[in-house]
Length: 606
Image (cartoon, rainbow, N blue to C red):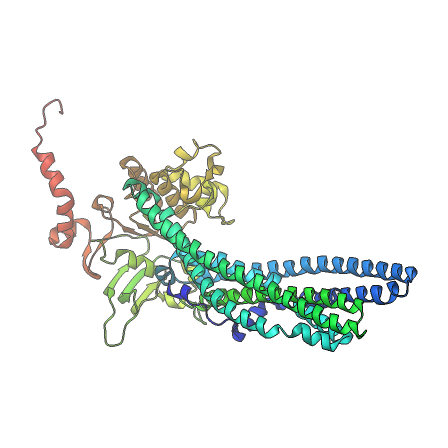
């Protein structure tokens, strides 16, 4: 969580200029908000001036008509100010919500374009913090920071103008406590900044901890780790509580301190005005107006301190959000990338070298694939086998161009995939993974994935071919039946069948099955194998499996070992070779064969 621990500058001009770009589409609304803020500030600052007129002129001269006129004018100004404030508040909130909507959409779009390498090294909890907490902090700045700060500034300017107009001597007396205020504010900002840093650290830790443990709740419960997880969360939550209490402590000191300084200013005004009034140098109305001006003066001062905190947190959040937006861990299409309207299905790997980690100076990369070369003809069914970590899944990730290789070439229909548009390349592929992911929604949406080009009849046909229709039609709502988060109400086998139907519904020319039948029972596996035999005719298919029984009919089997392609051939050819594949076969079947042959079979078949 190192990046969570740095708040950066309290104000960064470069970051602020970048944030202000999001206000450009709403420039005239912002201008209108600023103008309304200035008008409302002027009306607020003029309020004590009415008191002075009423006391020193209307009451002193016993003019009831003038007093009524002053009172009515005062109410009219305050009523108009209230209306202006209502419009301004609504407008600033509207600007903030629209701006944050645009920023959040840009951030989500950027996340979708980032490569898988980025998600390999960034925890989900941290990314969720970016899109939620950090964006909400910026929402507060856009809604009540940028525009409303003008209201506070112009309120102070208006108050100072009227104060110095009425009595510059009394104004200087009133403002003589400002050095004390500035010193107190300096101390507060330093302490509050450190406390806020701790709060942000613990918020990020809470998000990461909650995401990880809710996702792994089954493991916690199976191994009775609930008390341990509770103790860990209690420790993190207590740290967050203590950091917040520390922050509240500084606020609890600062705001009463501002009030105390304001009270000192009131005392000085009363003392100085009292001495002058004895000589008739100052009027009662002026004293009353100054007391009101003093009260009004400290309110925007407190508001500006709050705006400073909003600005400080916004700078920290914007720095993290922009760091994410600036991350270019993606695989962009080349400037001359060509479209791929149709695919035959020929695939070739030529001397491919690949590592997930970049090379370091003076050190060789940790190669996952080493000089891998093979070819697959259109319509062939090819299996890839090998021990865990041999590089099987990396091959299909590279074929779909989720990662770029360091050396060699990967060709589809004779064209280097780096010269093709990624969207076109993947449009002709379908992948069924061992770890099936379903989205919240309904069954039909999870099969068609919201693709309007896939009609309902094709969705139902795909489900019928793989045998998924048997359980789907028994569900409440059938194809419109609700699917909860991650498919929580469906069994592993049912989710696997939906995933298989999803792949078939797009009519892919290249179909990839990554351990696609490892999580289903024998009956379901038979259904899927039967569907494969019927539907993969004319399609190029790549099957990754640990169970060799599922790939014995493959046209070609690739045997991977420690990132190298060690053997290529059919099932019988590889058994005859007596190499790695033969040993894998023996590990899986030798014990079963011995047990089967050792059992006596009677005439009755028992």
